[in-house]
Length: 223
Image 1 (cartoon, rainbow, N blue to C red):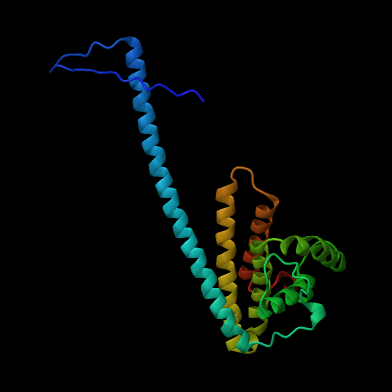
Image 2: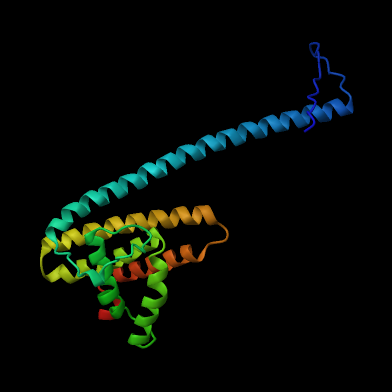
């Protein structure tokens, strides 16, 4: 590769005297000043981006760590044992699930989906959710969090008239999965704008559905 020559322009300015630069020299000088200014702006933006990125990582790790610690305690309070045919023996999910998360996933498939309201017939809707939505969701950790969020939301409502301790556990898990899901959605939108992926659109739709469920206090299928 040919080396680029760096032109140097020596300018001596007498006090209150205008420098006599040729048009070519003026053009080179202005170009160099513009490049220098652009480089400084780009460097500042890069430093700001790296600082923001470190902040996002710290926030995400804090949420995940607190969620993991809480789940360990919650498992002691809730019976989550499932038979082998109701778990994931081939580890096909985007991430490994704890026994509590396996219980939540099973609850979503077998209880939450059949209760979701839709204009379609209940059986046809449930079949499409299980055959299309669930296989898609388990391939991405952030979509899987939304499934677990929906299960926790329903269980926190189901225990409203029962054990207050278990209700508080599921309410806390609901908050934690919601925080993780909102963080993932915000990050995905920032990274993908202006063209959003199908996965990001699915996150937004399912989180909107969760807002509807939360605002009506009960799942739409129980209204």
